[in-house]
Image (cartoon, rainbow, N blue to C red; front, side):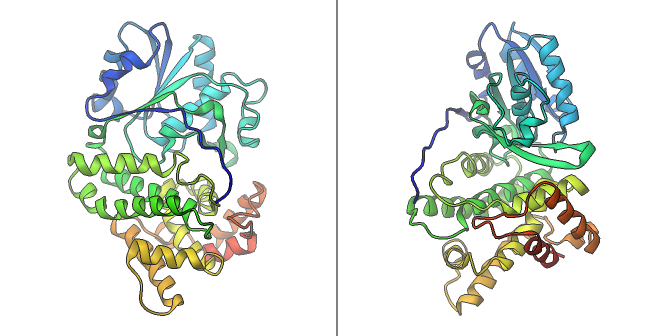
Length: 385
């Protein structure tokens, strides 16, 4: 385990009927902008609860943030923040809305071209508006971290940024707000959280025993609860465990002091930017293929993963690794998410297009060892056909 600093200032308010806590969490004199996605937040009554909790504060709203939040849409929110002298943001939605709010918070203070925030990975962020979140879709962990991913539609570019200035001040997590989600979105959340954990865990051993066991426990939790989460939308226990597991998957704790991969995400981002495939679904396409191609450098952890998460303990090492990768693919398929490019009608030309995007964005030395170059990315995508 390497030396590390673990810092996370986000306050979590968890449980049913917790939206009312906004009355105490948001400063009473704040000029608030509520940011949300589509019509579901209104239809389910969540926005009504939020407005009631905010009481007599000066409140404005900005809707229409996409599932892959776009720079173009978010810049309209930035303009509203500036013109209306907004001083507090409140994200109501899933990871895309929260990611978008982080960008708005940073861009509102940014001098110069706001897209520089993305081009510098957040290094150019020197300040941000304070904000909180009301989470309605467990998946990305954005409610308790300082990362964001934004798409520039005009150039088909999807890039991440992070900054200590964009941690949420608080996040309200009410599992009952997930009851009306479409099954597809819930399945996406399960896979998204699963791959977040794998990206921080399935690299190589560094004697980080607590992180390993914590990560394995979170993976086992997702495998255990997935059937109930999908079959019983109003089961509070399973929805609570999904929501909290997705938060823990990417709040920095299991990744502290350990090597991390993220190649699956970087390749997946290009698939989303080019073909508008849901983020989690691109991860399900790429991860099993990447594990197969990277099996030698990940050998020790793949064997550990197979034994501890899937109970695979017999056979040759190669057979056990094959079984662990197959179990991963089967799990994704079991929640209704395809794991092949062909399921989306994509073939060899798509691979060439993705590689061109990876090269254009400097994604030519990915993975925990920096050895996922363009040639290896091609092999991964060919394996995913």
